[in-house]
Amino acid sequence: MARRGLIAPLALAVTFVTAGGGTAQSQVPTQSPVDVTIGSIRIDPSQPRLNISYGLSDLDLEYVRKDAASATGCTARHHEETEEANVVPGAAHVTVAGVRYELEQFHFHTPSEHRFQGRSDPMEMHFVHRSAAGKLLVIGVPLRAGAPSTVDKVLARLAPECGEDVAIDDVNLNSLLPRNHTTFRYNGSLTTAPFTEGVQWFLTGEQTVSQATINRFQGLFTSGNARATQPLNGRTVTEVPQI
Ligand SMILES: [Zn+2]
Image (cartoon, rainbow, N blue to C red):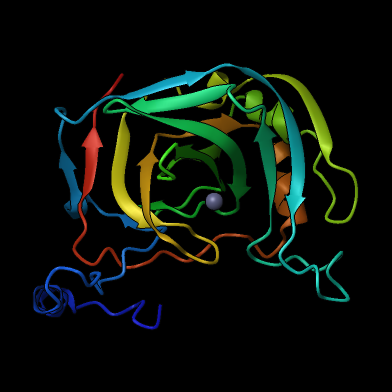
């Protein structure tokens, strides 16, 4: 973690790994989120498809606390806190190259954490999946003001930091995603502590949500709850067309 932010140590790290007999981990940080620049994108239609099997689920929307030890925790907005929707186990999964990843939860950031050519969106959804072997795959969906969508149903009432969760019945999880399943894929990390690396990121095009819902969420997280973009450090972002 101490090396996060260094731009140039790629060659050094390769040497280090070789010298360590192949057992040492690369010291080049591969953190998230990132700014997807045009120069970092490689189009590769031959990559395995992202197969999405999202069904119907009841949701439990909870406020994720990071400052429970603080006396002002119930009113202060910690920048890593969020609203998180827990799905019924088994209700949704994806498969990539024959590996199945179960959807565990999805949550929200404002503004968007990922950027495209420096541009951010008002919000971003993260769908967090885990394989049986414990490998994480996160689908990131930027949210933009426009036609109302199922996202409005999920965020119609926000869970308070110190209070009851919000129960939401019968949500069509598939309708939370954009219809176009073209993805921008790269290897990164969790965007909150402990910033664990080895996370497969799949970024989609935007979904729309009403301006009123954006205002409601930003009214809760007035200082935002997004991590700053991290250096690509030589990583490429693979665009896989999939209509
Ligand atoms: Zn997130």
